[in-house]
Structures are given as C-alpha cells and as structure tokens.
Length: 244
Image (cartoon, rainbow, N blue to C red):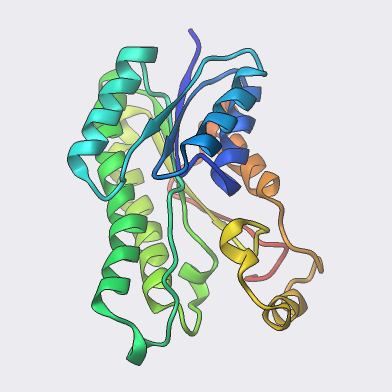
C-alpha cells in the first residue's frame, strides 16, 4: 500500500524539497501551505511528476480547528497518514528589549504550537495503525541559541524537548519521532540577511558552504524511510559542522 506523507510549510524552501524527496520515495504527499497557493501547486505538480498523488491544503497551523479539517481531508483522500513532517515556521527577529509580545507569540504559536496541533492529530491516526514517523524541523539555534532570536530559539528548543517526550510516549505503538536541526540553509527566510552576516556565518561552518534545501530533505527522507525504523528521540543536525 502506498504511504502518505504530510509536509507543513510545503510550498517552498525545505518543505518543498522535502515533499519532492518523499514523492521520489513513492509516497503520496499532502502539501500544507499558509498563503501562497501558486507555489503550493507548483510543489504538488513536481511531486506528481514522480508518479504519485499529491494535494495542496491551505491551513493556518496556529488554528487547531483548521488543522483537524486538514487531517480529515488527507485521510479521506489517501486513507492513511504514515509520515508527518512539521516544517512550517516563521521568524520575527529582534533584540529582547525591542521584541513585542506579538512577535514572541507569533513565532511560538506557529513553530511550536503548530507542531503540537499537527502531531496530536496525526498521532491519533498513527496509534490506530500502530506505525508512523513524525519528523520535526528544529534548528541549530534551538541548541546553541542566537542573539536577536530569543523567540525563534525558544520555539526550536521547545521542538527538541517536544520530540523527545513524544518519542517516549509513542514508541510502544511503533511510532518513531525525531528532529532534524538545520544550520544555515539557502531559503527565502535567509535571503534577507546582509552579506556581512552571511560571511560571518560562513566562517563558522567547517564545510565552508551553506546548505541547500535538498541537503535537509535528504536527512528527512532517511528518517522517514524503513532504514530508520530503530531510530527515535534523536536530533540530527545537518549544518556542515556549524554546531559540533
């Protein structure tokens, strides 16, 4: 039976690369997006080119009701949920004393609570199946911290703790829960950084290059595969050595 994967934030960047990678592995894919329908449809088309079925579903991951509707849609379309990739995320960077409560809440609610909503809904399905893979996208910032990103670092550190707790809860039901912590990745989110900041980051990367979204997607694909059936509760850093 063909497996089904859900990828949140699947319209671009790491999410898009992941959706395509999972489709290459023969999985049907539900691409969850927030605002850019055209980009989401492009991802769906790219997945279908690999001979699988794919759909785009608009959903605000901060909205629990919307998440429930999205999960029902996936089940009705594909019949199962075998892999969940919690990738949706935002940044609202700023130094602590200048950071508004709204900027803090938006990042926590999207990155961490969105992960909670989708994991809870999918875990209910996976527990009945007695199988499944949940892969949460953290960040090296959640391990080492970063000035000007207290909200983002808190959300990603929270995802790491959430991942380990969920792995302990769901392991007896045959569900593996892991996290991938990317370093500096070439995406829309990092494009806005100045050349000076990028250069400083590069000096801290032993491999002396940034990651492409595909580098992260390859790691996610491994954790989603049968080759990782005995791996759970782990944080896999994919950062060129940046955070060793």
